[in-house]
Length: 506
Ligand code: MSP
Image (cartoon, rainbow, N blue to C red):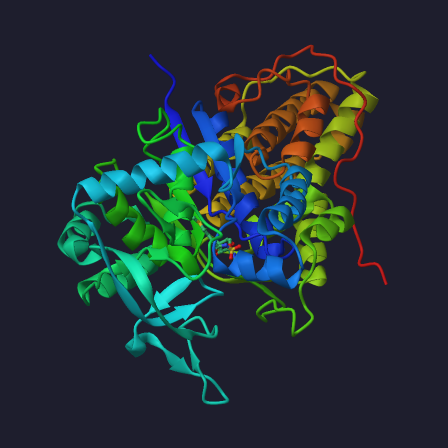
């Protein structure tokens, strides 16, 4: 049987500023999914990168007094450095200025043109440079000073220019058919409903080229025009799959923020249908991360550097916190206090304590030798049942992209294992019944090993260190290890704490 494959992507970030916690959050959540799939036996391709063309980048480069390419070359470095610092296991970091991407986008355009979906016209309407999006008058809102704003609250400007148009209106019915026949295409359900209503309300043709600036991919056959940055950007997923007929296409999952779900679930499938290319299987719109409940913005002065957070708290604590505390799909909030409290409770007192107590007793009382399992008694049967149910709940949640629910299930197993240990009090058995003590330690270590195996996608570095201590070979850590028991008699290295408690520095 051939290995099943899984192709997952993040949105690609605009490198017109430094990466923020929202970028880190999306990268981490997607990395957790990619790692889960790998451990579950899939051959995974994971694409991330940067969105480097368009008016927004052009203006930012001008403001910095740089040529756009020199500007993005400089600005992309911190995004790559952040991914590497956070342990993001991407297969490729794509930049839309990459040569293979430019060629792909032009080929995509030609296929859409050949299908009769592109025509030359004149755009007159509202444009938000910050969102790189066109808006209808009816969508605009009024700001405090009476100015017109996009629905996202960004400034809009009246734009009049010659433009190529895409016949998006043709795709209203095919899109509705897609949503109805494949409800999992847009997740979670709240975003599905929003997008379905938007499309059901009618679609106008979409302006897909600009002539008033030149920082973009040229329209084949009409070089006065550069392509609309979203057409260029969305196509990165195809470039990353190996091209129009790429071996990794179609994508299994695009993970994106809620503000860009429309581009991914309306424009993107319509472009692909036009070009005769298969559609991605699902788009998941995650929520926004807020700093103490407030939107992060330069004017509020509450933008924190995620690389600095990772250094201060440790990468795994940050990864754990974001996946555990934020219901995946909903908005969520972070603060130093919440990170400290959550990770002390779950990692130091929960998983760390369980591993530390059982491993140090084995080192002290059993010469560091993995003990033999005994005949299961009533408490072992209860523990086993809790673990079977917990493991099922974990897999169901992960496969349904409910990352927070998977961690709920995992913490339920931690509580059950710590309860088993306390109830059987092996430290007391050390004085009265060493054979039984060894059995209790064996059962606890087996439970710990299972928990640590399942925690790997979330906290890869700490779990690697714990699996070393538990004597699990580096090449035998995928989920098939859950089917086999621990080997008795294995010599374990001396244990060392992996999750010290932390406090907030003054
Ligand atoms: N360049 C476009 C995406 C093109 S995808 C073909 C873009 N870039 S972005 O830099 O503004 O955002 C990148 C991703 O980060 C998006 O998925 C966006 O939703 C997400 N986030 C931006 N701010 C965020 C938070 N505060 N919280 C969580 N995610 C956020 O949009």
